[in-house]
Length: 472
Figure: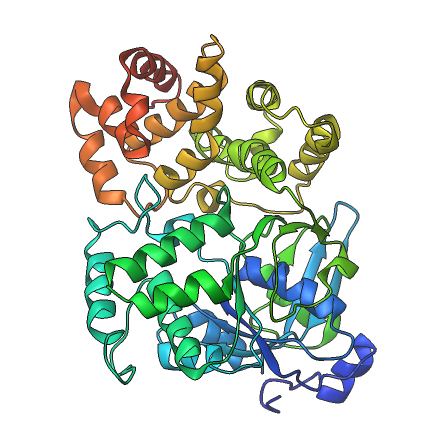
């Protein structure tokens, strides 16, 4: 740890405060998508259970190097603030031993080529997979197409030349796995921790598609024979850190931490699959290993994530800025319960405990001390709504019901698009183009989510719902 960062709080004082040593563990985990959620979830789980100091994480950023620069200046150390309705607790986390700019694909390749590296975890966001509606690499995206051409040229070469490198997350990961294959470094697990149904299978399919498109038969064989793809369901609300949290840590600990993370006490991680090169004992921190993860994924996507998306658009339309404000609106609260009623009809496994889960969600949403901004949640709606709302709506309509609550979510999103008030979206230009089409705007917007939503009856229902939220 650099002495310049630990000004008021020395290494010795930090160790004493946490009751343990801060000697750094060897790198055994690579992570793609260094951000607040990763640090509140996978890095926290690993920190809690790694009593023998064996599982260090090397975390790579996504589109910006800023998070790595901030964390690297602190030798990977950061404060985790658990914020309940009753108060805050602060812990020092040291499981991230190296923070790296994601553009350094050479470092990623070197990391995965090391036999000591046992697994890769991913929090690259739903949009970060850069897939089309069929869950294949989106070749209509110029960046994806350019990465495929890069892979076609470089994976066929005798030497893996990385003076240039791909820019999408999965293409970068494929380069790292190819480096591991060439080094004969053994099997490895790739663990998606993003809000995608069947995220392990989806990641495997996407990577093998990249390899196939690049004509990399040896890489493809390695993926099929030596790489495991566990599936996960992850849950911990992690809002954006503000200056107030930086000042809180300084006041409470004396350490000028420039990169703290704030999160709720609740945490959940459900995992299904194999880890051929080993893993931390995450179950000691509450992770659950199950044979069938699909019901848990649907519960999380449809209840928590689906209602989060609805709160983002309906709450903003009604003048709210945070989840707590929006769920405190009696009208929106009623709408959320109607949305959950629809989803619950298709979550019938007894072990899911839907009633208890819904009650816990309301308690979490009501925690006004967690400033979870609707503008943060509402990003990349075209991708998120496809995953969080579409299946419930289609299931409701197949059962002969109108899916009115799910329709309302789409209407709230469409209204924000028509008002030019949506948060950032990877498909932002396409959204803007669709919203400008006058009477054809609603079907054009819905087509960006899924063509099945362009059925005239659905379009008309969404248009009626949107009228309740449109400001113009």
